[in-house]
Image (cartoon, rainbow, N blue to C red; front, side):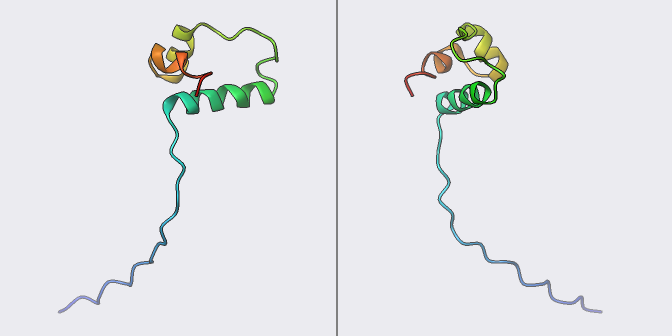
Length: 68
């Protein structure tokens, strides 16, 4: 017995996906936390080592978070 042919697969159109550096991603998360009220404006941020541990990135990435 022969099996039926596979169904036609959906065609996807190319989509432009913005590329973000890790530093931009960390900065975006910090910004979201400030805007949501989880971090109060004016409160000093944790040290780079603690931010890196929280986001799973290196200290150098955290150092670039505010210059990205």
